[in-house]
Length: 253
Image 1 (cartoon, rainbow, N blue to C red):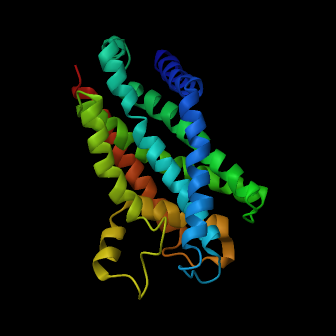
Image 2: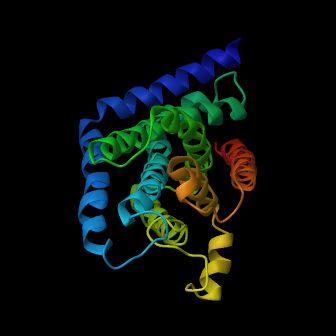
């Protein structure tokens, strides 16, 4: 019972921290809109995607991008907690490090998922075709993507001593994950270099975005991998990162 109460408290704290940060909430509206409107307009006539227009192709990719950047940034909460002494207090509490990690991870994942939902709202306003059932089918996939990425951010932050170092490392990790995932352009097929396809195969976000496209675009999209393969890879990635995150929190003092 103590473990569940601690997990719920940490989850609620992280969620409230996100909601009360008005600047971050406003940015979460602006950035996806720029990608879906400005970027799609600029490159839509140059990239031909069979079966769908470029904005439809880009839509699941921007959802994945929003989840990635938000989830990884959430790791900064660990550094803030270190600086203000809160992390030391929860680490000496009579709860397991596994529970502490899960509480922060689920709280940050919920916040990142909310930003993904905002992108869905923009897609509806921009006239991207999907039905309510598509939205509810995509939500579990979005959550699976977020869990692993938030865990990566928390692991990185657990080793960092300053916001500057975390920002540099975060960018170093974010950009390859984003550009190799196929969010902006196809990374498989005859037109892509072999090295790009190999690198993309090691990117967990590739499988998450492919799963989102399979659900959102339906028959118009030919998936790179079957949906069960995509979900299986994402689940394995999540489990591995939760294990690494628990170990990283266990070594903090």
